[in-house]
Length: 368
Image (cartoon, rainbow, N blue to C red; front, side, top):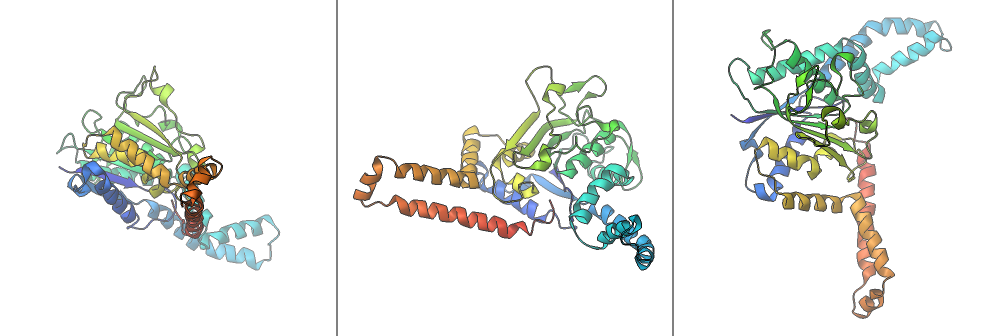
C-alpha cells in the first residue's frame, strides 16, 4: 500500500489547488537525486493535501455580512474621531484583502476562538479517512506541515492519540500509538510553541519521537521527527522549537533531526517551497518516506551544490575573485591571456540578476 504523505499549509489564502506546485517540486526533486534517477515519487507516495483556510474565509464572510449595517450607521453619524469611528475604520478593513485579513486574523482565529476545534476536527477527519484504523494496521503515513500548520497539526495529532475524533462518517475513533504512529513528521518553521495551549504543550505532548518518553504522557507517536528552521526567518525564531534537553536525559536524540538552514534563494525565506528546496530538508525526508538508503557522500554533494547556488554562495565566490586580484598570480594570469575581470564581472552580474528577481518576485509572496 502506497505511503500517504499529507501536506498542511500555513497562514494566508489557499484554494483547493494550493499544493500543486509543492507536489510538482517534490516530484522533480526526487527524480533529480542521482541515486533515485529513473524512479518516480508516485511509485512510493500518495499525496494528500489538506486545506483548512476556508474555515477562516467563511468566518470573515459572516463577519462582513453581519456587521455591514452597523458600520454604515456609525459612519453616517460622523463619529470618525471617536472610539466608534476608529472601530468602524478597523472593521472596514475586513472588506479588503490585506496582511491583516489574510494572515494576522488567521492566527487570532485559531489561537483565541472556537475555530481551533473546528479546524482540528477537519484535519482529524482527513487523517482518519485514510488510516481506517479498524481495517488496516501499520499504515505508513507522514506529514509535511508549514508555519501555522505546524501548530494545527501538532494540536490535532495530540488530541487524536489522547481522545476520540469523528471521521467523515461520524464514527468516533482514537488512534493507537503502537501501530498507527506517524512515520515521518516534517515541521517547517515550527510555531507549535508560539501558539500552544495548556492542554497540549509542545514539549510535553504526544507529538515527539517514539523513543522520547515523558512521565505524564508515555512515549511519543512520531518515528522520525524533522524540525527545520531558517536563520533569517523571523517567524521560526519566535519561541523557537528546541526540545532536546526536555525529551532526552543525554545529548543523544534518536528519532529527532533539528535542522537550521542558512542558504537564501528568495526574499520569502519563510516560504513553504523555499524550505523544501534545501537538500538538508528534502533529502532525509524523501529517503524516509520511500524507504531509501541515504548516501552521505551524495547528501554532502547536494548540500554543497545548493549552498554554492545561493545568494551567500555567489557573494563568497565574488569575494574569492576579489582576493585573487590581490594575489601574486594576478599578473601571471594577465600575461597568460586570462582575464580574471571577466569572471568577476560575470559573477557580479549573476548576483545582480538574482537580487532583481527576488525583488520582482517579492510582491507575489502573498501567502506562506
